Length: 251
Image (cartoon, rainbow, N blue to C red):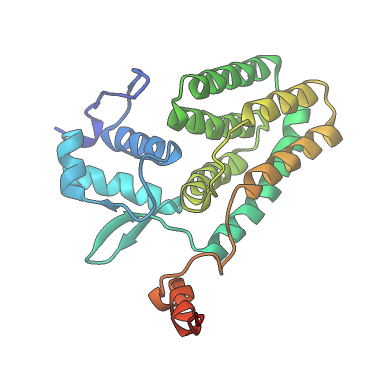
């Protein structure tokens, strides 16, 4: 019996049951865990452990991990296994630069092509996102915020952009998990609502401006200062060495 074609049904945290081929479902659950920031950058993804969790063979796990690696959110290391990607500061900057370009194009196309039904679905996603944050489910709120941008890409009716955006959104979630500064407040649903209004009004200039402001807001919460952190213990604790060198005050 072909193992790939056997449906594996696993409930999500929201209780929804996923269906599809086994590697589709494993892929979707890991993708969601990354979007919700439940899987930290650098986490080892053991094929054996994942196989036990999902009740599938390592072959299925490898297929799912290969898809995630293609999207840039998993790193496959020869003879050392897979890990969740840990974007460097420079990689984070490049990803955000690409994300801005893609978001601009998607917004312009969504103004032209988004249907009333798609706009209604986007509004419902924003309500669900707001409800998640209101009840303290930050992970689900972050995931819905990312899915909002994926749904917007679908409304743009450009398949390559949807695929590219899927990779960028998941990589952005890793960057936020790795580099977000102390202020973890979240108000994207307000900005999302304003964006939907502008798209519904077919006001491309306003919609693009709102999207760029939204990206600025996300960017402002990140600490991408390369001098901000270090793995050099001597550098990290250099202030203690300086304090020791200061002459003591005489009485």
